[in-house]
Amino acid sequence: MLRLLRRPLRETPATPTFYVLTAVAAFAYAACFTLNLVFQYRVVGLDPFQMVLVGTVLEATCFVFEVPTGLVADLWSRRASVIIGFLLVGVGFAVEGVLATFAAALVGNVVWGIGYTFTSGALQAWITDEVGEEEVAEVFTRETQLDLTFGFVGTLTAGVLGLVALRLPIIVAGATLVLLAVGLLLTMPERHFRPTPRNERETFGHLRSQFVAGLRIARGRRVVRVFLFVSLLVGLSSEVFDRLWQVRVLDAFDMPELFGGDEAIAFTAFALVGSLVSLGASLASSRWLPRHVVDASPGTPVAVAAVVQVLAVVGVALLGNLWLVLVALWLHSASRAFAGPIEATWLNRNLESSTRATVLSMNSQANAIGQVAGGPPLGALAARTSIPLALVVAAAVQLPAVAAFLRVRRVAGRPDVTVDPAEAQRG
Image (tube, rainbow, N blue to C red; front, top):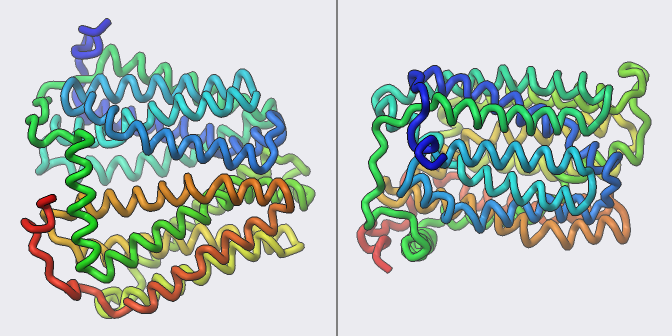
């Protein structure tokens, strides 16, 4: 079995294998997540605190296992890491869907969270090794197209299967990923893997030095400090919104007659509209926003997007009409998609190449820490009082992000303080 993890029975070309893998995974993830929260609320019977706790456990699992599972990809085999990852994700989905208990939801999310960390980074590293750095950009572009297309198909499939039983799309998604892992075990090539040199491995000691370097960069760059602060705020507030907006809709409103009053059809339609709106917002940001605005004053559109997010969360919490709540929800998603490219461009322009990966990693970790720290208290508040109150508090927590972005809105290109990258890396 160990030999089969390292070498397939019959190798297929790397690029087509990657495309098939992308399509199947996108389908499975969309099929699972479209109605997952409705399933947890209606079938498993989780209360708001339990639903948020499940998400918090998932975030904590990913945070803790990112480095240990990364060592498998660096030291043993990227192929093996990807196969193990998809197998665990599939098993985690299936456990939650089949058993349908609170304990199963916790265990399932731990299992699939560990699986996700096995695939995170390893998959991109594998295809880059196989096709080469010069060719991989075109492959990643095609990957994005396949991800969007088959994610759409997975969402539609979830709606159809959900008419039979809300657990069915989750079980089907899990089985699909297990079969994908088996298929990769038999066919996925790995011809160009070279173990990472000892001094470049992402051990915990290496992460400590990265963290110290990142802190030094943050102290010298006001924009970086702001992004870390905002990522923490967004993490603190986002977990309760992401996990409970569907519960808020289910508790407060009947499903429209347009969808026959069926929750599976309705939430599938909501997800499809949200995806289209977000795609349009992303295109508007990258193609239609005047270039000089992004170059000279990127903080202005980002701050506006942050205001929209805060108001949208309040709208979901307090509005008494379903369609207005949905508009607020879609505006929230659209504002995230609109601001994303601008934020990425702005932050990267204020980083040195030698420390870019370190600071970007810290930015992601700040968000994860915020979710782990903020999810349970706000979930408990929702359970003890009401979901609308917890959402309003979440909006208030995120509100300082607007002021933070406005304070540095014109710091677009050059860092305000120069930090020697070599000095920043020492520690």
